[in-house]
Length: 512
Image (cartoon, rainbow, N blue to C red; front, side, top):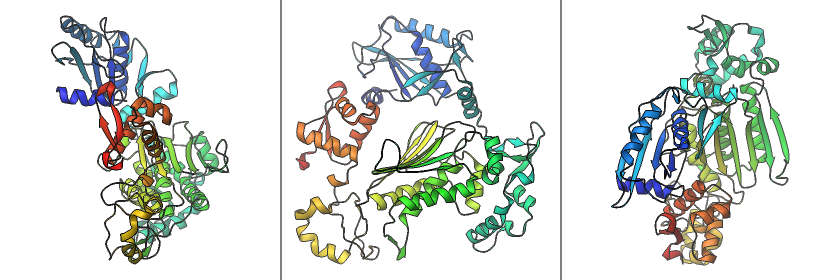
């Protein structure tokens, strides 16, 4: 690893995949705990000779080779780290006076323990895992087991809601444009075709699987197979400590989809939007993608309660997840990963979902039209989708009126600015509303998120801000504070000055 890459990592700080260790008196046990947690999660990089805040102290240059030998000896000792691993620490001359040691840890297909204790990586911390349920989830994640395929040999046909099948046939037929194989199939044949009945080739068990029970099971059968399964739908706009409205959904996935979609329709405005002369419901499109994602991609063996929450400035869904990595999902790093392929295929057949990955793309596309901001996707043991809300925002605008108003835009900029940097195209712009993007070069201040506005106001008053001040101001972790500051730099709202501990952020010159 070169010095430029190291400096970039030091600037960002510790994350779920980066750990700094001082190692002033040699390599201590917490280094091996981090090795264990990285192996059990998604891997990562350890830098020895670095303080928690990214300051490089270095390790004694003459002692570095012995430290490396001791490190290899420990990770190769099955009485300490089990199963053992082969790692190659790298001694790096940071500058003329300081030497650091870098270890790159790849994710492992095994579950590892250090001194008989299993560690997992949660954000930027190494956490002891003692609960049997959490350990079981770790094995599921490691072995890439699709728990939806678990066979229930004593489940019977009358344990399923067969009354839903006529409707499902019609939905599949309509979604396929008039013809679908399920239309003329008998019930049992349809269930087998959908992958809901099969055989476990390891145990030889044959019968209906967990996917069948979750999609079409009667409520008492679902409760038997997945005792903690529930989706808690809440509205918290006025009474933020409790809720304004609540619906607890415990029924099959087909009807859960309908109930959650209706809950969203009930509590969210449906803004007028034209797409190629067709009136499109942004509300329904966004809620559909959020609901279908949280229903078909969750880990049903987990006891974590799935949620659909509507607040004043955002709505979000969250559910237990079998994560393949950790961090934020963007359009640039999107790698579709099916968590429950049988359930996902069933949803696609009846029109509840589109191809894998399209939901993320749709949310990025339509959320900007709905609220002027982008959604947030966080992949971890709990998967979250957060969609910003702004009831006053309207993407549509009158093109003719906007063209006449260009001359005095600066006089009304505080009232009409909007977040999207959209090119004006007379053939595509709907002639219906009253707003117009007024600056093609940079994102207007009124279009910043609530957290970004707080930072902007602070910098405007104080002249500058540090990542630590942003952390305290927003009451978030420093890693998230740094991320928000970087976003504001990318938006040309802030400029970054200094490096490492002396880094400050000031307003971009043209905004002063």
